[in-house]
Length: 114
Image 1 (cartoon, helix red, strand yellow):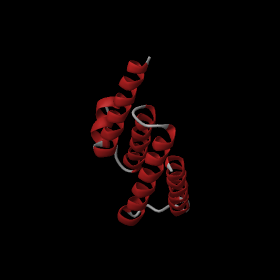
Image 2 (cartoon, one colour):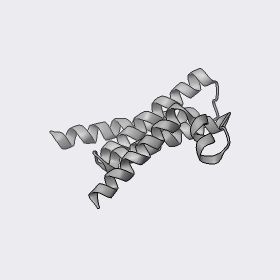
Image 3 (spheres, rainbow, N blue to C red):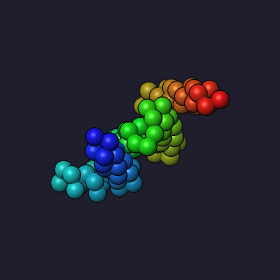
Image 4 (tube, rainbow, N blue to C red):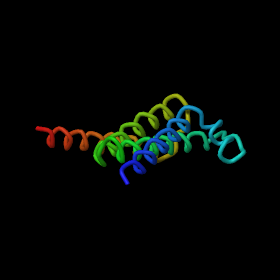
């Protein structure tokens, strides 16, 4: 079972990295349609989630997976808001929430190791 879990984690992490780096290409390869517009942003957030899932399953823990997701989404959404100009009413509250959750997860992680 462990080998299958590792294979699944590596596969999901690779797919997530592809979505993060080249969402239009992955969309074309998976769905036969090139992603554009808001679909690229959503695909990249999905890529971050898949990377975090892979990290949580192997070699990390659920805590490390959630920390990866929270920090990744906070950074990416901040970048989208500052550089991309896409700012809906819930963008900055979502960024702040992910920053707070990431800080809490870091605190839990430090407490658990000390």
